[in-house]
Length: 450
Image (cartoon, rainbow, N blue to C red):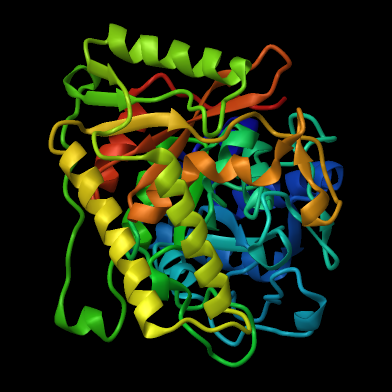
């Protein structure tokens, strides 16, 4: 059973379809593993044990009758606490929402179920998804499975930690300032921020009266976290696409990858920048990965895209984030200011589009360092190791968010002190599969924290 539990979602789905293992047995084993491993790190915070087992039994019955089944049929998984799952709490880690129970599934959850996935529970989050650590009053703190005195990142830290420890086959998080990419990097797993607008966000919002849609500013996205790039692709194929009413009038599919051999890729990269210097132990691992890509025969060129001022785009990103929280809080934003911000996003996307006429992917760090020690002080008092400003950790994920580009994080090895390093892979707008194909072909591999 361990070989299945430690494997990938696609492999598990194949084994279930072939009758090599039952969904019921796999779900029971996964729940037992959660019972065994979760107390040490507090990644999974809610379970629907009986319902999940009943759904797994039904999945097995469908296989036995020869029914057509979906690509994730019978695969047990968890989702980030901020997604609505019918009958479960959706609190965003906020005590004010402790009594709320979702009446329907989020659209992403609905599509996962339609593909056959068995939702066994939910993973921990940062309070209101607003931190690169995972802690809140309702569920407590999640620890990094590599070194428990460190954070798994946030706000999808519970999701990444659950994947790293084999407590879920697949996860879904959300990403604004790197909330999928940073936890994936800190926990040594794969994560994808899809192109803005590719994955619907219905059912992913705080409880209460409907406000401005979270996707109104084209900044946040919903994306998968997994132990392989293959699983990221399978997950994206299941959930991507328009929802009603748009889906009544149109359908679309994402472009095929530009290449299917690593040697054919045109690769740009930057591993450091004075605006947010990267720790030497991180650049060492990333440089080794770059060398491996170059040795494959790929065309590799160092340097920021022509026309990209990384510090200026980071400042633009900061302005976008301030406006985002103003819109979704008690603040306000004039139409003039909204249009001005929108134009800055469009300008950034245009610069990157010209770059991707000549290159296929852009590689850079996911973060300035590895997972840092837990820091529960007020935000204004927090500092990163070495006395560095707390906000610097968002520099490297900012550019893809600003331009709405697909960006994956892939594990690029461990530092000398045994912490994972993540390589960020940024690609052309809507060409998510090019990013995923590079992640699959490149020198990236999940390693269990043991």
